[in-house]
Image 1 (cartoon, rainbow, N blue to C red):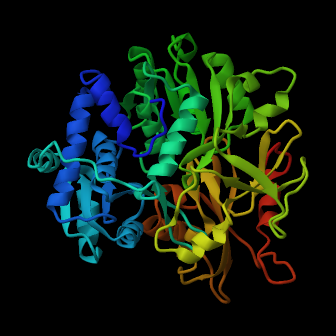
Image 2 (cartoon, rainbow, N blue to C red):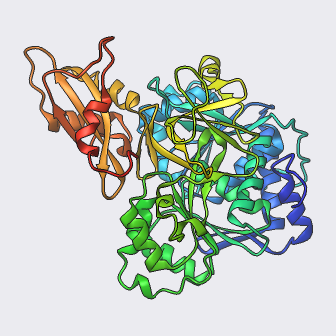
Image 3 (cartoon, rainbow, N blue to C red):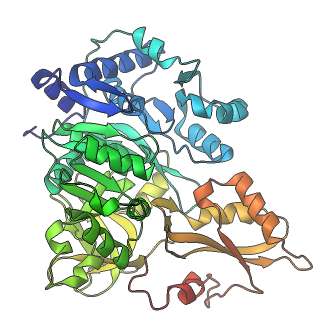
Length: 517
């Protein structure tokens, strides 16, 4: 589509009129044309409205990657409701919090997760209806069939939220980032330009749809009429086979998946000529791994730097910079801003812009930025400086306009593409009876980029059994958030004001590394 995207369902309408019988989505052994997708999305919207949902009401979706998630996201855009796509890796107590926080009245639930929801059903404060998706007792198909396929899309203001994705919060609880028609539409336009999405593209979506790297990546390609290949579970050998068998042109992976692909016997002999864009991001990419991948695959690599609050990517390092012998240092760069996004580097204390080469906090401005955090006005106010969003990442810009991420203003740990905020983990560990104090840090991990390490101080007169503490964490935290190691020390290092010096705790592990992420 050449014109700006004013409503995220507009591209579906456009491609349905242009190519009604062309494949829009493939999933496992099934496929849907643009006409079929359009009808299913409208039925989804109509079924929501038949339940009494009104504009602004929240729908929760809990399952691994499935076309119904995209149907629900787009269905919410048509109905005027909001899809909160849930992280299926969360522990039951974490799911309870998020479902209650978004005040979801309808929960579309993958059959694989019915047992988990049954265990927390009594604690869900707002859910009135649950529709089971898949399995022996599938309700989703009949739920769609019961609704008409001609419901008109509700007129939407550009600032209306239709997608709510949760990002872990420094306060210890996840926050719902409200993404709008304007923000996601702007991202679709900028990403399509940056990655070369076109009508004949075949886009693989392997990232979970609760990530912007999943849903926003999918919607960007769909906006250009591209075919979407949706991957439910990332099995490296099968992913590689899909790329070759289905002539995939675009794919995005976290570095851990690229490492797994490289470990497949005979991977270097695979014909990946169809790939025009292999994007990577979401966690640190070691230079040695990147160079091995570039030598093995021989395709165009794009580094992606983005975040939920920006509706997806806002900086890209294109292929030419990956293979520029005059500037090998650019392999460490996050790249340059995409169209429509401005990035500046400021002193996090004074808010003043700093000169090129000086480390400061990255702030971004542009239509891609979210409207705010759901029911968190104070957090929304804090993270904005006028129109500028404070990313919490620290880095520098060089004289050629390339941005380099050096560290974090906030202490987020990125492990295998998942954001882990220490406050969430610390909140759980601090409830363990024998723990007096705790600090959680990220340490280097060759497989996942970073792993979670808890540094704890025992209560006076107590001894901490680390195995039992790890078991306690397993009961209360999603797997990717759990500490992989625990260190017991007498006291935590602090500055003169009493703040824990996490930099001092991290320093021994990151010494000698070329980058701190």
